[in-house]
Length: 70
Image (cartoon, rainbow, N blue to C red; front, side, top):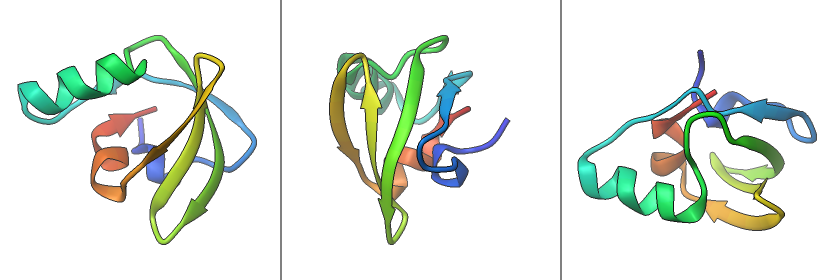
């Protein structure tokens, strides 16, 4: 298991766990970041990532991406 920030661009990964405080987890769940969901990193700039999740593109800060384990 590793944080989303270490994922290779273009490779699909499965989310294993979403960490953080309850409101952070709820925020990420509302965006589609739930255990078992497929996520693909499109690009990474300074630790911030743009991902494809549930047929949508979402930008995630480095801090948030560190809480998403793949």
